[in-house]
Amino acid sequence: MFEFMTKKKWLTVLAIILIITVLRTMIQPLIPDDGSNPLPKSWFVSSGLMPIAFIIYGLVMLGLLSLVFVAIQSLLPGKKLRKGATFGIAFGGLWFVYLLELLPHAPWQLPSSLFYPIVDGITIALLGLLLGRFVAADSESHNAVANRLSIALTAIPAMFLIGRLISYNVFHIYSLYSTRPIETLLWVVIMGTWISIMYTLLQPSTSSKSLLAKAIFFGLIVFGINIFLNDMFMPIPFTLNIWGIGAFSYEDMILRTGVDILSVTAGVCVYEILYNMASSPPSTKGSNIKT
Image 1 (tube, helix red, strand yellow):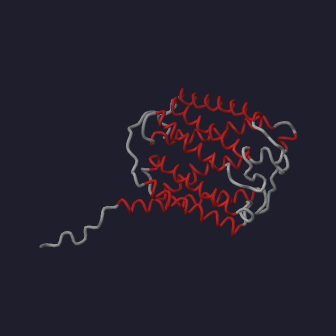
Image 2 (cartoon, one colour):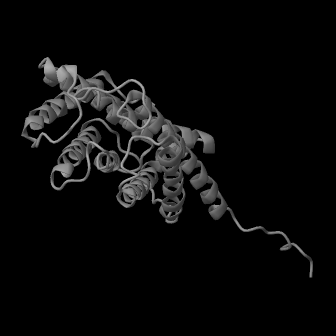
Image 3 (tube, rainbow, N blue to C red):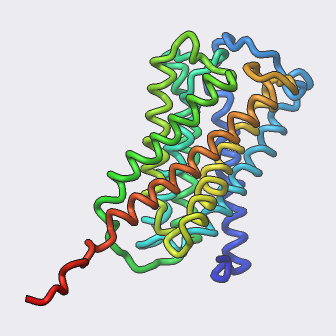
């Protein structure tokens, strides 16, 4: 997994992380803030330590994503830059869509609702491109199976939708589902669709694993780390309650993230089962009957 990584390559990864962290920190004050967010400010904000906390978070977040790239890049097809672009598009798109979720403290308000998704999506895409260019190794190219995406677009969004419907209707997580169900479910469908595209793009990185291993690797490591990193940012600018389902709390966040990871993992399982059924040769029963 990490055999190809030399000391020089690890130092290159560190340099890329530092450069992007500095760039993202410099951009942060330029993002407009209309002051409409009703959430209480955190201790980091009131004590003036927000820039330091932001830098530490950026280093951890980009560091973990870089480790994911290093772990899977040898299994991705194509030249170095193609690998970086694939990773950047897949992960940058995930962050863009995930940050568009409607929440009580962040309803859709254009153009302000697009600022963070665009900036963070581009940041992750740039990380992928730089890691591809300076860290990855070339591999043989091969064509993706044509019907993979069509199956993924059915299985994974469906399971993600089921998971979110359970979260909204059974657990009553913090959301705008009760007051704006159409927009909320539209986001769920878009999110599930992008996860399926992401899995299709990164599928070669799981090709040597068993069905269950593929699902756990993608759901817990690839998807799960991204969602965890996104959620981990919220306590930096805002104060969260510890308990309270349906409130802006750690308990609600853990429940939401856990159900999302389980639903995506289940979606990959369903996808792999359907794909194996579709790609299996037709039964030859009766073909050997003597005439």
